[in-house]
Image 1 (spheres, rainbow, N blue to C red):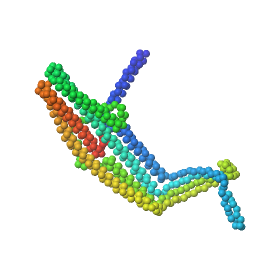
Image 2: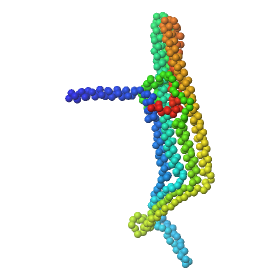
Image 3: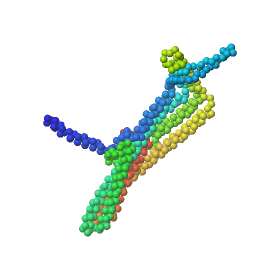
Image 4: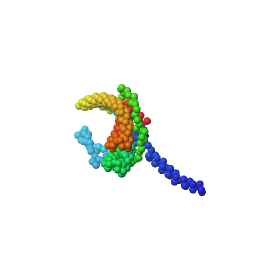
Length: 448
């Protein structure tokens, strides 16, 4: 009995533990890798691209069906109120009429058709397999775009949170100064205008904090939306994701863009266009098909042909044959299609050349941005350290009566600006780094 009571008493503790564990799980920090993997699994765009792969397989089956036997069944029932007659000359100057059929006619049969040679169908099978590859590449490209988008949004949130920390530190420092000036004013050692100025500065900082807080909320919502996560979910990002940058990554003079998904898509498009042209040329080819049919017919003078009746007559018929179709002239329709396909192929080659040039441009710009950003980061880091030293020195001088309030507020604003510039330089570097990784064709490495 005591054991049961002890077990009952532990139930609320177990429930409390479950609640606490769920709370911790709900507030668990979301690393960049976690965010990217979540987006790959839950993004609506990625899911739809995978559905396109599934739909592509069904399209392949649709085309393949044209090369398989085509079997159809048919049945019919006809009532003839007035039966037509055939007039025959008996050869002795007299004629006689004969009824053609019965009032009730029924038939049921099956037909078979099998393509033996049809170049258009065979080319369509090749195009279907290439289109399946196209959907796979499109899905892969969609994942890469989502990774790029989520990574950019992720760093945007981190930067704004860093700026929030800067504002919070500045508000804390200004409140200390406000307390000092207020005490000095009460003791007649400071002017009221100094108290008002520090209050105005504090109000401005709190307004900036409110604006940054709203921006963080909006950016977090945008991040969750791009990930495919419910906007109402709670997320916490670790501070360590926006680390300091000390040196540039290894940069090569040129890259092989053949492993880029965009280029693979264009190459696949060229293949599909070539197959489309081949399909148009196949319209000049003859086609050969095997056909066969079997039909059972029944005729009766009354609606009793389904029964064993002396008035019902039933008979079957069948046929097997070959059907050959030879195109002769269609008003140059096929020639026009082929020439249009030639134009599309030439345009696709120009698109590929332009895309390679565009990828080269993106890579070169990413290298330039990385070099510029690393220089900016180093300069802004030193600038922020110097601004912090100047602010602390000015604050000490102000406390000792060697500096006025204007100098103190100016150095405080300079410190805030230097710190924000350093954080913004980190963001610019991360964005350029994402572009460089994408240019190398390794954007998915961010999620591994």
